[in-house]
Structures are given as structure tokens and as C-alpha cells.
Image 1 (cartoon, rainbow, N blue to C red):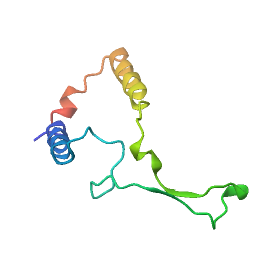
Image 2 (cartoon, rainbow, N blue to C red):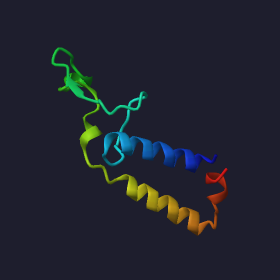
Image 3 (tube, rainbow, N blue to C red):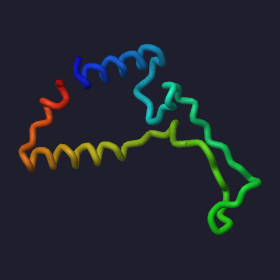
Image 4 (cartoon, rainbow, N blue to C red):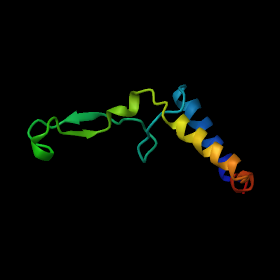
Length: 89
């Protein structure tokens, strides 16, 4: 089974469980519980505040990956590189 086939199966499994689109971030156990907490009792670099742990970006709509993806596709086309064989192995 190729990497791409495994990835598609995993995405379909997540979608069937959550009935939601693919999320931005996942924990190592596959869950999306990535709350962000503010630690008022800590000082950041040069006394900056607030100090946060976690990742509040998990529930945001992130579109920046599409720019990187288009750039990668452009570079592949410009250098006449075929990646199909790597994805299908």
C-alpha cells in the first residue's frame, strides 16, 4: 500500500468519526483538544505578557498552506520533476 493510499484512508477515518473537515492541528493521539492557557504568574522574554501554553490556532481557519503548496507545485513544474512515483510507492 502506498503512502498516499494510507493517508487517504486515515483522512476518511477521521472524517467519518468527527463528521468534520480535516483539522489544522492534531495531538499525537489523534484528538484535537489543543486548548491554549494563559499563565499570569510567569513573565515572558523581557517581561512580555501574556505567557501562553498550548495552541489556540487549532480552531482557526488557516489558508496559508495553499501558498506554500502552489509554490511547491510551481517549482516542480519549472524543474520538470515528476513526484508521482514517490507518492505511489
